[in-house]
Length: 256
Image (cartoon, rainbow, N blue to C red; front, side, top):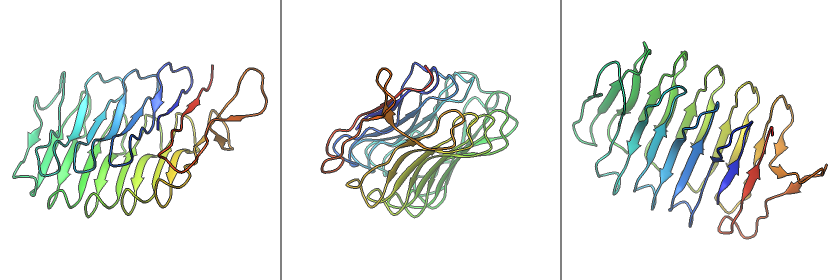
């Protein structure tokens, strides 16, 4: 189920969620912000939670990629926790405390110009317990918590990101009670005080998923619709029939 929209004058799409065959297959979250040509791939599932999950984040002005977590072959298999390319102030390679996946692992690194440490991964008690990823971006005193697991993958996962100049968090993904329960994606755009609710699932994927977007200085929600020519009336792009196993495509253009 590809969901795409264009914001501002961006020529690049933001593919929010792509389902193939259900949650046990691939889910990809990609976001573009602030004229960035680099994608931020937040979560990518392949063949279920016990398989690969990749978290990649690009910070504004940074050409270096930060690969936070990569699972291969299941949680009991190796994880590529951090992969940097380019110049790092200190150190060249992240410090790692590795005593096996069932033990604690902490990776700390510094990015260019940052006085604060970027705690990439902190495991306590194993993968079935809490995992917290915290990052500091340039000029931000607030942390960016990318992933927080509590009591296992079947429980809550929260992805929170702060964008430059924003005092409000961007809640990207929030799972509660397992994948078969609610999923909420909320995003704040530059200058917006109102959230943009991208996805909201309740009680499973079989239920409707409203998409609401705020643009510019709008105080009222604007459902994702398409205008053609000089039409003053919206043309809805979504039709649900039997649940997510049917295709749904949303395309939204804003600001030219």
